[in-house]
Length: 463
Image (tube, rainbow, N blue to C red; front, side, top):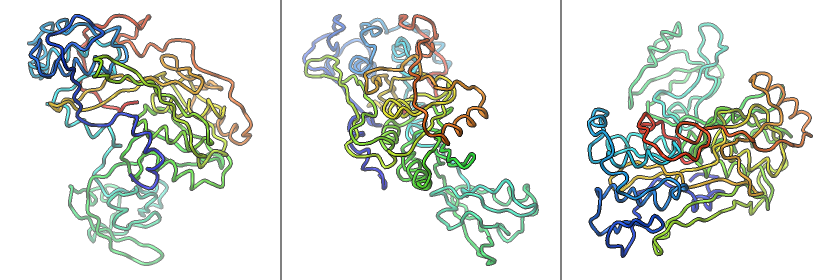
C-alpha cells in the first residue's frame, strides 16, 4: 500500500473494488413481475442464461436509476439483431445482456463480455504503461550532448541508478551523434539490457539497464512566476509511486513545503480511483471538515430489495497541508474524481477556481468482474458535498471564467500571489446534457438501444 496507504484504508472499505461478485435472491420460485422484489432465485431455472440472470440481479440491486429504467427480465430477451451483433464479434449468448445494459439511461453503465474484458482490466487501476528505459532528456540540451532531465520513479533507469543531470556519452559502446542515432541505439524489447555510459561529476560510469514495463507518473510539478503548479492528469492506484497518484501528490507538496500558495491544475483530468481523490482532498483540510458524501445503492438480499447508504468522509486528523492556500484550474473536461477533489476542498476552504465550468459528473460506478469474467460497470453512487448539494449534470462554476489556457494560468498565479480571494461561485444551473445517451433534455427519457463503441471503451475507474 505504500507509505501513505493508512490515510485511505478506511475509504477502501466503502468503495468498489475489482472483484467477482455474486448477488442472488433466495426463496422465489419463478420470475416475478414485481419490480420492487428480486425476480431471480440463483438455484431456480428461469428465463435467460445464468449470466443474463446474474446481470439482471446486478442491475436490480446496484443501478441507481433502477426504478426508472429496469423492466422485467422478459423485456430484454430476444430483442436484438443477432446477425448484426455476430458481425461485431459479440458471442451470441451475450446479446440479450448487451441489450439490457443498453436500456439503462447513463453511458457509464455497460457490459463487456469475456472475449474483450480481460484486456481492459489493468486500465481500471493503473496509469499508462511504457516499455523503455524510463528517462526524459533535457529539451534544452547542448547540441550533440544528451543530458537526462528527469528519471521516472520506479522505471528501469531509476532502478539501475541513472540520475537527472547525467550526460549519456555512449549507448552499447557507441557515441550517439544525433537524435536519430540515439533513438536507434536505445530501441529494445522487454528483458533486453541496454548499456549506457554516462558522465557524472567528470567521471564516466557504465550502467546496464534491463528494459521492463513501468507505470507512468500522473502528477507533474512546475513553477510559474515562482508559484508551484501541481498538475494531476488522472487518479490511479498504480502509478510510478507505490501509493499511486496520492503518493505523487504528497511528494510534490512536501517538496514545496516552504511555499505559502500552490496552484492545482485539474484541467482535462477525467477522474479515476475514488480513494485517491478523497485522500488528496483530505490532505488539504483540517480535522473535522467533511471532504465529500457518497450515496451508494446496496443489495439487501435478505429482503430481496435495493437499499442505500450515505457515507460522509470527515477528517479525523488535520491534513498535512491544511494551512496552505490553493488555487484550482479546471475546464469542461474536469470530471468525476477531479470534481470530488475540488468540491471537497472548496466547499470548506472557499479557495478560488479559474477556467470554465466542469463536466458535471457527480455519479460513480461499481466496477467488477462477473463469475464468467465479464467486465461490468454500474452507476450506483452519487456525490453530495458537506451541505448536501450536488453538482451532478450542472458542473462546478469557476470564480473566474477564462477559456484561454495562458490567460487562465496567469490569473491563477495572480490569485496565488495575493492568496486572499474567497470563493463566491457555486454550482451550475444549466444541464450539461452529458448523462442521457443522446444528450437530450429532459435527461430522464426512457432507455433505448444504442449499440456503439461504448461497449469497447477506454475504461476509467469508478469516478
